[in-house]
Amino acid sequence: MRQAGFARGMQRRARNAVIGFAAAATVLAAASREAAADLDRVRWPVPMAFASNLTALGDAMPWVAEQLKLVSGGSIDLKVFEPGKMVPALGIFDAVSEGKSEAGYSWMGYEIGKVPASALFGAVPFGMEPWEFAAWMYQGGGKDLLAEVYAPHNVHPIFCGTISPEAAGWFRFEITSLDQIKGLKFRAAGLGGKVWQKLGASVTLLPGGELFQALEKGVLDGTEFSLPTVDEQLGFFKVAKYYYLPGWHQPSTSQYLYVNKAAWDSINEQTQALIETTCMAAVTFAIAKAEALQGPVLSKFESEGVKNVKFSDEILRAFEAATKEVMAEEAEKDALFKKVYESQLAFQAAHKPWKSLGYLPRDW
Image 1 (tube, rainbow, N blue to C red):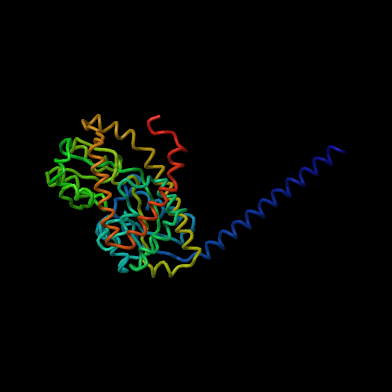
Image 2 (image 1 turned 30 degrees about the horizontal axis):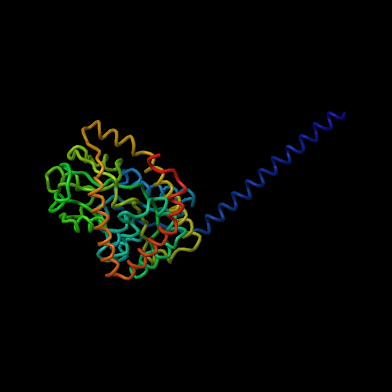
């Protein structure tokens, strides 16, 4: 009898547990539906500066769009457009600022002529590495400064991806002295481009899709663009056999979701928070993907006859000296540039003891 009573008790408890789980699931489902109902319906086009197949550089935004559609139950549906399909690859900022597109995705710095401080958020020569830059953005005041820089241009920018150092560049011939830089026909962007110019290079800015042909035909002597994985996808190793590192000009490279201010202000705080949080996840997504994949590609380049070469200390010191001159000149010309750059330098100085002592040396 005791055993029968015990069994009946177990059955009741099990039945009650099932009922409890079912009730909890019903409550959660209802809460989820209610939360989704609180989201605004968003249908924004998102033209991109990079092709969506470019690893870590171009595929972060499609991932964001996919995740937002999933977690919002379809309320937020961002349609990604490949470069040139809706907006020219280098015209994302203008399109969003002028209200021609509610949103866009790009490296920050192509608009350096109109927004000088923008380049400081895209990449800084001899600046912060990806995890360090993210720390400054989220914990060191970078996010607030970003909003301040773009407020006059009707743009709400969201940090939405950052990647490992880019290579210093592809060259059709070996670079052994500073004299070879004078008159060198080189593609570069942002502050790195200004440093190349300071050392005498003839710098031009072309979108990624035009670089292979320019190298092949000798329009360019060399080009920088992105990570080894991205450079491999663009085929540079087929027409240039000298691949120079390290990426002094872009120790980290950051991408942003640009949103037109009126479009951003038209959606509620919950919807805004979901977009911002998903972009924060994209920063982790891009860093992890970028960092994981580069080693095997460098080995592949060597098998294709490419020489992976480190710039000499002499040339790196020249780049560093030219960088200091460029940064001083830009800070002198633009108060916001100076404010942002001083914030970055202060963060780096405060972080330096930990960076120096907290990690094993790279050559350990």
